[in-house]
Image 1 (cartoon, rainbow, N blue to C red):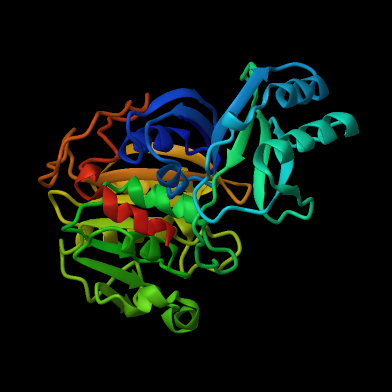
Image 2: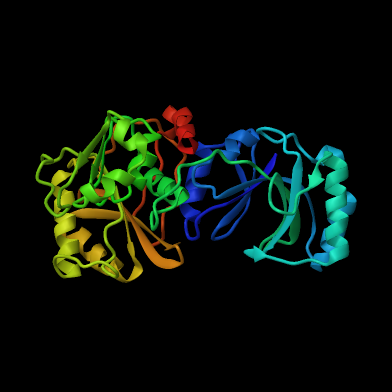
Length: 379
């Protein structure tokens, strides 16, 4: 089966590394900054549950790209009942057709639009629901792709509503996965805020998951229920620049999104804030296998890059992404000064491409040992 997914802009390297851990017989056919076309023997349910996919589609048909109206007419003429797979979930009674070309919704002529809508209705037995209820079929084209695809959008399981300003489910999942999660981990987010990373990590095996934020009292009422009920979670209201209740070397992995210093007031200048934060991380992270993933605004990236080096960290990879349209940088790194910090015992996985400017190692290792647990991301 051929599938098409969309994901947060700028995370293409992370997505490429992760895909083989979520689907069987993965073979990529196309990838750009925010989308991928691939083939796999995995079920549609499995592809729909990929935690970092904003949208997932089953490819039903395609035609060589040209004039959009002519393309839609050719697609309509080529579609047959056999090209409409049985989709997961309850069968919808209605449908609508959307056209998404080069990253934005596109308009098509009335005649081609009616033609493809009549074809879908005839092939599926569903009625047209322009208001958006029911099954969605998308005509999709991407830059640098020489074809236009007709796809069925796969239903994604419902997810809890995010607090205003919180990172998306997809980006939270991608950054937690980049931290090489292991079942024995003590996980920490020292700037936990609305709890996005904590909730994401709850979908994976872990020994302990620590939520820490100076404003815990303010955030507590908005924290998702699973973060309050799960016995693995410890709630702290501590300054990330000191973390006084955490012993030296007691944390295995940190994933966090510190204040960007743009719309909030920091207690010290940004350079001092970054240096103190990295020193604090260096103290609490395990000296052999401690690792981190940190998201910061693009302008602050050189400051954190210097602070990580001064604190004795290896930055193994950086990724430039967009967060709600704002340029940001992701740092992926570990404790130690050698080229290959000693990993914890784990199942081997296929190696990833190394970034050109950083020494590298796989971002995801041993994920097959608890792949089933990752399905909880979508619940």
